[in-house]
Amino acid sequence: MPEITIPWYAAIIGLIIAIILILKKVQPVYSLFLGGIVGCLIGGASMVDTVNVLIGGTQSIMGTAIRVLAAGMLAGVMMESGSAEAIAHAIVTKLGAQKAIFSLALSTMIITAVGVFIPVAVLIVAPIALSVGKQTGISKIALLTALSGGGKAGNIISPNPNTIAAANGYNLNLSDVMIAGFIPALFGLATAVIIANIIKKKGGMVKDSDVKDEEEKTLMPLGKALVAPVLSIVLLLLNPVGTMLHINFLANLKIDALYILPFASVVGTIAMGHGRHLRKYAASGMRRVTDTVLILIGAGAIAGLISVSDLSTQVVNLIDAAGISGTFLAPIAGTLMGLAVGSTSTAVILATGSFGEAILATGTAPLAAAVMTHTGATVIDQLPQGNYFHITADSMKMSIKERMKVIPYEFCVGLVMTIVATVLYGFILK
Image 1 (cartoon, rainbow, N blue to C red):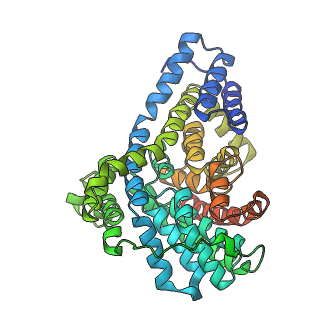
Image 2: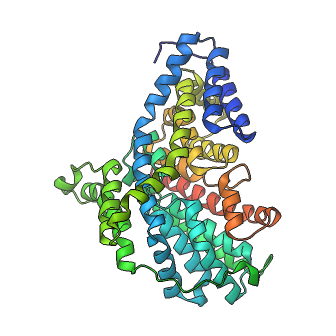
Image 3: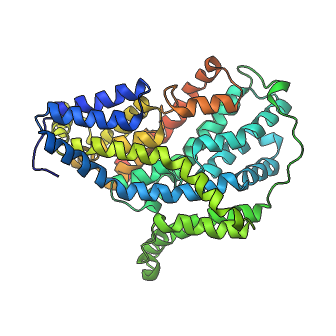
């Protein structure tokens, strides 16, 4: 990085320009690069320094990028093999119609938690939800509240790009961030189930045309479907378990998602008897994470701009002058970025890259910062400027107007998880 200091206002202008362009549907990577360039030039950096700032910033996120690529392989295996669908069917069938809302929320939570991206998790469970809703008379709004709320809960404890970004943004082990999100996730699941039960007769009901008459599928045996996700979670947890139990051998293993997730994917694919499809699954996973990796590179440019500015110092000074606890900066940063870009993973990437140093400078511990930023990004990331809003609307056969009605309930789920994370890690366990 060049030895220059850019004024805080230039960094803010660059970030705002990037967000406005994203909202205007300009390609996110180019939006972020342009914001970084404009911020540097407004701040007085030379053309050469501007290039060096952007390159230095993008280099800083390469560790996160390659771990996201590794996560893509597990996601590809889970989605393409049918194992995620088998897990969802097993949960709903086991719990039965009496606990329909809970079973749907839990299904989405679990298949998101084991490495399936949240929009895809909703896509997988949506046909089951529509069928259950038709049989039990549960409204579409309640069904999507259960699916989306369960997905949000699973997303903060998963080896998905958003969790990887939260971990790497604060130089933490992925497994530590996953474990730390568990209690907020349980509160999120409970909130989704309670709200969905309260509103289950509110809004439009599932129509006959919404439910496809498909031939009975032959689903994969649950035991085979669980091999890849269970193996990946167990291996990722070896290090923190060893640390907690003072088992030096496990504590010193330093297992990384970079090779654990592909390894579990390969073993799981072979266990399913789908070894010949491994290349197809890997290619599918790569396609799924390409956009996220590209956004990471763009976010690195903004992070480079922020890192050579005095924004962190100014933010800390402002918080001190206002008498507000610096603890609140992490969840606020995550929430604001989620509101701006309509994506959990992009919000976490931008929040950690833009405000990570300022958050840590307030005295907030890295793990607390990661969990609070991460949960904050789930509060209002389901807006129309993001893909998640439209994917979930299509999967549940909902109009835009009807889909908009679910946003306040999803907001409540994310807000509860953020409040729990902030109280737990920002104050109780501080």
